[in-house]
Image 1 (tube, rainbow, N blue to C red):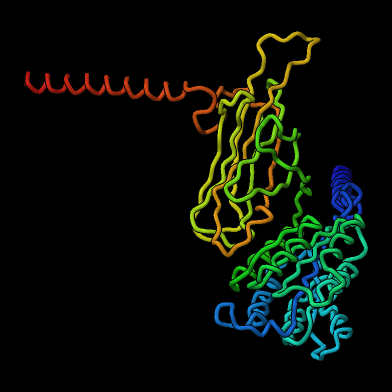
Image 2: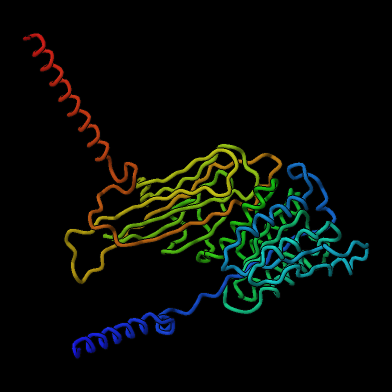
Length: 424
């Protein structure tokens, strides 16, 4: 009986200890603080020009509503999303009043999909295009906290409320250092609209996209909302050179640049013995381009010998095309313990084969993102830099030798079989 009581007491004590260990309070003590929810404000142009019926046979407004419904269904739960309009309420001719026509349609916060869709359904093309005031209002919508903040502006025309230049507004927002990114989407834009929206996006490190179809609009907005939910490191602006000798020296990190159509740009990276260079490049087609295009990333020595390359080609519509490479530099066999081994300077060449119709503006160049990483090389890293021939031609020699040996063996076996057949 005593033994049973002791066993019961021990079991209760063990259960209590397990319960305490699994309790929320105990778990919370060891867990890091919750990450702040990212914030996104969708700014939609509802001006009179949105009545134009040139997107898949429907009006621009109808296309925007359909895209918004699809986007709202796919918004990640952790994203706080809001909707702001411009030109949705005042239909008169008074510019002073028309340029104040921006309001918060749905407040930035946890998303009620039904409520947000209902609010969007009530919109009808109405008035002016006060982009500058709308951006200022959206920046206020996103104030507070340390979370990622993003404005996605969808419009079909340039601002009609000068002298408040929306590009200057974007620069002022960027100058505040609040890490707020503005992405812009132009619905069937003309040259002036495209130029203005590109300027707004570039001022804050955002992107500009031309949209001519409903599915393009919903896909692009969804991508930008997802990017806010899972943000990447902010790229560091750099400018590649026309030759390696004058190229910028890069360290591990993410870099942004602009590259003209069919241009080559050079960058330099130092790689120590025993390290591996991993590099990738993405070129965005932020405007209409011709079919058949490609991007190539090459690693070359300072003397011009190619080490390894990566390339990718495509056909038809694309948003981004990427290529990458790896280059493991073998460790030194005998190294003086006191002497630091010399680094090898690797020249990286980024090339693209994009072209565009004559009506498409080619300035500024296409957006480029270059990722550089230098890590310890794998212990069994061979002299092959990547999946290609890599450094030297020994892989090709091995393949040729293997084929030769296989051919000789097959010939010997064939003759042996013929000899046996004749004997029988």
